[in-house]
View 1 (tube, rainbow, N blue to C red):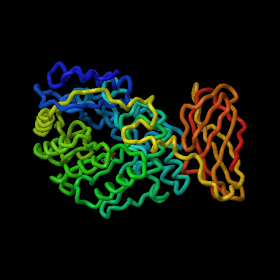
View 2 (view 1 turned 135 degrees about the vertical axis):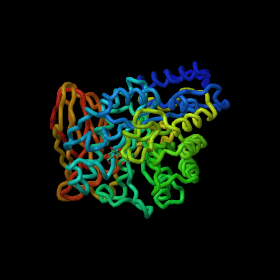
View 3 (view 1 turned 120 degrees about the vertical axis):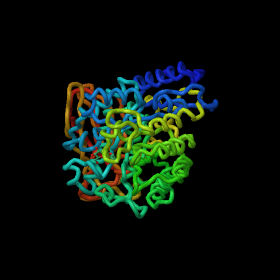
View 4 (view 1 turned 60 degrees about the vertical axis):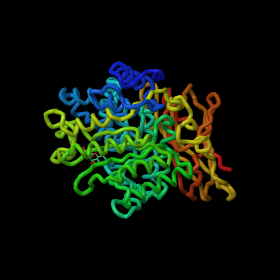
Length: 486
Ligand code: 9MR
């Protein structure tokens, strides 16, 4: 269901229609992000909520939601009324979703997801790969096992929400605060390519989701950290690494204040061919002027797609002492709320039209920021094999199972010589079928399965191993499997 191209935003009736269309889109195809075309002048009637006001120019206005507050009706009343995009403040993070290796828990994440969808909102996923809020088991890993755990985590979480998340913060806060280089984290120590591996994994896991890099202190265009992230995104775009958006967290305070070059930052990232989102906005003291400046800077750049405040009321903020949000602790609208609403209402409205490219059923190559040559499915599935390859062997293990489905991991081992490219085969014994597979490329013919290496894990050192994983429908099975190497 798309948004009617001829609906006229700007009137109360058409804004309602747009909101209804957004709600239907969210309930039906959650990957759907409505696209808008043809600017048609300022809105002719003011919208009365942040979400409706932002929707007039094709943008969203979101908030972070905490699962523990969904029973607070004062909180949910404001959140439901004002916002049309939701980010889980903590519940989709690594420690929450994979507390034990290979055991995923989506209880609280789903509470937020379901609340959002049932109320017609879209969801930003936050976050898949991050040095912080790692569960203990992940903190204790390093090297290739940590790299594999990161890949498995991305696949496990994205499989659960496949086709349902508008934007995923794939990688969070990977840059150093001062020198413009990478943050020295356990993930960074797995190799400088960990960020692009995360993005490639994410694209393959859910081709419908827009994939974002998210960070703080990348708001000021002159800061080294901003330039470092800018250069990474530029490099990714030039090499076809799948990235669709950059999230500016925008936690503004005296140490990291709003600067008038913020608009330059937004437009510069957008000029690289990515969407820009303001993902965690809060402003110490909540100056109405500064809030309006932020909104106007976003509105000035067509690819600035939306704004999320990091909480609803001041009392919900991680920095509650800074009173940085749009509602006070009693749920009253602050002066900053009015300035944000007015700024949104003053934006030129646009005519909505259905997005051409966001259905989950469409292939990755149809994603707006990817040319077909950048599709992960078209990556070479085998490493170059000029060097003679040694023999390989493989074993399969069930990680977890549930009624009607299961998750397995296959370990591919090299013998006494290095392996350069591998192919694993088996036959399903009882009608099983893949629902998603990661760190490999699959070919299925009837019950016969062939999995070849992905472009980054074909080379296995002598005596070494790598793994790939999958979720499947049917009864858990551990069929006999073979491994061949060219
Ligand atoms: O708001 C979140 C707070 O409740 C958590 O204790 C904290 C733990 O790291 O994370 C906060 O959210 C952060 C977000 O996930 C990433 N950017 C910075 C946010 C504020 O710390």
